[in-house]
Image 1: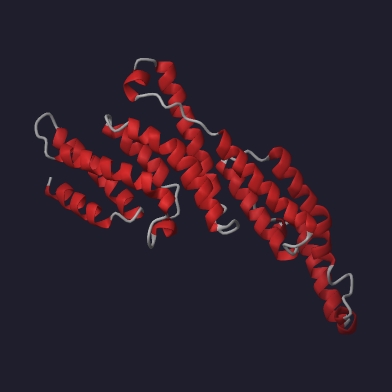
Image 2 (image 1 turned 60 degrees about the horizontal axis):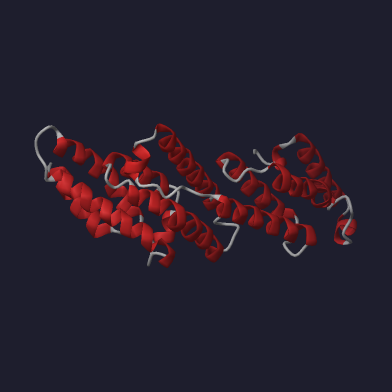
Length: 261
């Protein structure tokens, strides 16, 4: 989505509106219709189109589409007041679509050992995990449009704690898989959420990351058959995840162990 303000019709009508205002200051002061042509067209044409796109076309698990919706709604705010009925409806529809996507997201709570016995089960877990993280990445794109409380409830409570953390915890027996999954989750979350005291909804994620770091530390203490070397590579990937969520002391300790290895 490049923005409707980059399209030719917008440029021509915007320049026309500026010319009308500049050519007749008295008319402009009296709210000349030509001077307000672009805002009126945006409200009467673009806003209904946006309502249709959100209601009928948008897939919240498609990150590119979610980011396009964010850009479109942000552009509309420039021209349409938030208290307009259709604009309020657009925000409500956007919120409702995100809530429905989070509510429908589900990862089977199968133990890793059980899933390992079935390639189909492993594939299903992978697809469900990927689907949930895609919704999470798209959802966090709305952090500047939606309230912080709504964002943390949907992202951290509805997706991370309810679906993704149990999947992370069940994969701790396979450190390579656990680190890859942790990266997918943590890198989807805004670092600003953890700049001060972390949200209470993130506690389960912080706990499982702490467990992952301890498991990697234990791996660093092993020797022979390249186990220590492999753990050092995993440790180097875990350190920025710990920093991201505010576990700096544990990140520093793990980083020092990694360098020593």
